[in-house]
Each structure stands twice: as C-alpha cells, then as structure tokens.
Image 1: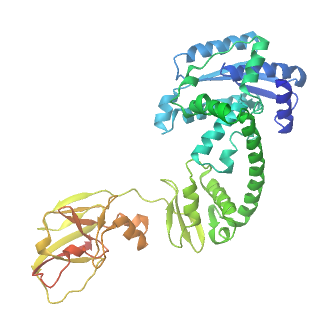
Image 2: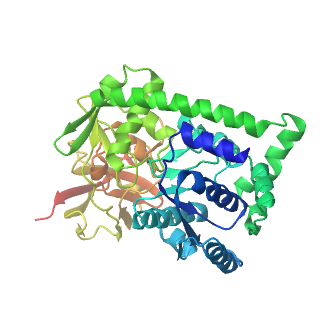
Length: 456
C-alpha cells in the first residue's frame, strides 16, 4: 500500500524518472528509515542510483551515536554515504537565527553540494502527511497567507522532492517493522518546548479524539487544494508583474499607481514579486510590509529592512541609495563660548541679552528663547527614539519622529538636526519652532539667542 502511494505521488508531481540519481536525506530516524526501505524497493523497478546524506547537527547528546548508526546502515546496504557536521548553535548565534532555522539552512546547503557531487541528484526527504498537518497548524497560528498555508510542497526548485507527503507516519512504522529495519529515536521529538512537538503530541491528538479522527487526511486534502490554487494565482501575479515591475538598466521599480488598480489580493502578490526581485527572497517580509508599500504616499519612504529603504516618486516605488551611518553625539554646553559640532560641521553660539523690540524668526539658523526658563548647561545631542516636545503654537506634545515625518524630512537629514535640551525638556530642534514653554512672551525681559552656522 505504502509503495503504491509513493509511486502515485512521484508520478503525479513528476518527481523522478527511471535511472535518476537520488540522494536520500538520512537521519536514521523512523521517517528516513521508512524512506530508505521504500527506495530500496523502487530501485529494483526504476533502476535508481541511491546515495545517503547525513548531517550531524551536534545538538543532542546522542548525535554521534546516530551518525555511527547511519554509517552501519550504509555498509549493510552497500550505499555510498556522505556525512557532514557543523556547530549549528554557533552558526545560529552569529547569524541571528533560531536553532531550527540554522540547522535547516546548514543541512540543505550540505545536501545541495553533495547532490552536485554525485551528478546532480534529486534530494529526497522523508516528510510525511503528519509533517504536512503539523506545518499547516503552525502556519495557521502565525497568520500565513495562501502560500504559507500550502505548507510543504512536493517539489522545490526542481531538485528537492518529498515523495512521502501522502503517507501517514503510522503506515511508515508498519512498513519498517514489516521489513525488519531498525531506526533511531530522536529524544528531542518529545520536548514540548518546541511548538511543532506540542502540535504533534497535544493539539492533533486532541482534535482526533474530540472533533475529527481523520484530521491529518483532511488537512492533506485541504493543503493540496491550496497548493493548486496558489500555483494559479502565482501565474496571474507573474503576468501582472511583467507589466508593473519595471527594469531601468539595473534598477527595479514598481508602478504603484498601476498596481493599486488591481484587486487587493493580486496587488499584494505583485508587491511580493517586486520585493523578491529586490532582495532575492521574502525572508522577514511581513503582511504589514506589503501593506505599507501599497499605501505609500507620494514622496514618502518605507524601511523594508535595515539596509533596504524604498521611496515613492512620480507614482513609482524604488530602492533609495544606502543611507550613511547614523550620527551619534552628545555635549554639555554652558554657552560661554561657541560649541563646535564636529559630527555635523556646525558652530553653535549663545548670546544673552535684553528682550529686543523686534526680531526675525529663522528656525533654520536661529532661536529666541526666554532666558528665565532655561537652565545651563544645555544638552546638545542627536535625535533619539521617543523624543517629544511641544512646538510653538502646537496644542500639545508630539513625537519628534512624527513631526519630522509630517514635514517630509528625509531620513538621512533627520540625524543632522541637533536637539537642544534644558533640564530634561527639549527647548529647540534646528529647523523647527522653539518649544511653547520656552517662547518669548510679553513678560519676557531677558532672552537667549541660539545661532547655528556652518563651520568654515
């Protein structure tokens, strides 16, 4: 039964042809042992050349014993074996990944390189229908779209194949037992600190007992429908992307005005196609990122990642040049002598005098402040997250970030606006009105004039 199910999956998705080279991702566990047992049978009929690939993650106490078991199995069946091992924990820390993500990347990198060594082999993994159901629930709880809910696909990039996606784990266990094969138990599969294990050990059994005994098969059917509809929508979005994702020499631009005439669902997909072309993948791209691009106003910018900044001009969205490093500085200044801001190449001077009969406001270079309300030394520093103040004439305090955004100050210019602080209150920001509390009024007798000029 299991053999026929696997054959049907291979044929339906065109996963293999006769005389293909196949690299089996072999951990020594139940699923991969069942996969090996089935492929040993298929080899007779399809004349396949089989290879084993084992990646030692070095995360569990029994990892080395697992590797020795794999070597023993390879010898018993006279199969070529390729083994690799890396410090997954260190790699995850260096690349800011979780352990599962880091292990997956290193494992597939190893398998891909090994497949090339043996003549461009297909890489077969032992993912089952149970894995499919678990992934579906995890993606559902994460709020994934159609592509994510499609979960595990039968073939990836024409090389990675999953011929066991229609087979339940219990059927694999029966087949392995029938063939008299031994396998290793991964103790980490019982660790409920991992979300997947909680879904496998708690959620799915609960649903099977109280709602639907065949929930795993039901989800398998649902996932197949989602995958087929995803393929259709992907073709539609690529068709629209050809008209709206523009290439100007090496620059990629998105015709946002044209995209926003599409249905919202299709527009989101076109934006994702645009992002894919910009950064090469969609990792760490959220639903909110896509919505922000669709809603991006003329002249505004959106930080897609820490290094990718998008801007909209003339109805098109494109990648802005890389921003300079953030400028950081902080001075305590008593005002008795000019303050030189080396970081901005500016000179700041303070003049204390009686209230003049008349004065000309120039927020870009000069501020008139009520001297009686100001405490020296002043703090002069760059803008920081959370800064708030009440500009002259404003009804209340506002975030400096929002004030700058409302005035369309480019991101690269925001750090060039020194912030002046008396005590713990902002009294002035270069280019903006003085704070309401420190303004000159009818009762003001003495003033402080702050003047900012370029350094010669």
